[in-house]
Image 1: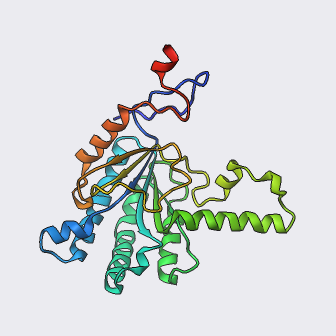
Image 2: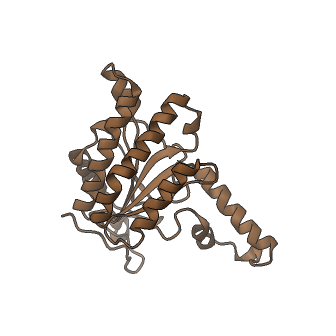
Image 3: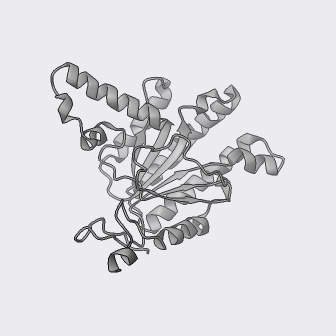
Length: 255
């Protein structure tokens, strides 16, 4: 097992870490995987669910405490209705088929993203997953569903603004820590490592606030091909880096 790193610093010096506490993944490439094989996009999404299962197992085996998966963005509703319906069906199937096993393994499920515009059946499934696993203490599986980072920040600002209007907060009390506390990810550490598959080199409106000091690994493999070996390769890349958090490198300190 790769050891879980300490997040402490010593005298402001740069830490050297071997393994991330929180890994977030932009799961990209299901459609291209299917197209390359002459298959419908729906088959790519189904194979992508298998990759999700493998990623959760790998995170648990490697001692990663938080795994965030970008499952469905707030922009994905603009896709063809048939594809959106397929994705909703896969979400329902995953929760109904895998939730019991996740709970048995001590995985805690948490969902981030807007919920006010979700259909009652989807919303109730997400809440069921959270409520059933609320007291689990193994891997924390964070599912970003109907999620967009700009929307998340907007909703956080609205909640804070309402408190200021009601006199519960003074404007001068607005700090980065206060914003953190009103984000969907409140209580979840910022991602140490963000992985994106398919070779695309962008965040696509994912965890913009939380990614301020994240390391990034962009992998050429398409999501259905992302397996334990690929996960370990990303972690090996991460382990080779020196995280400075706005400071200077250890070499510069020594000189």
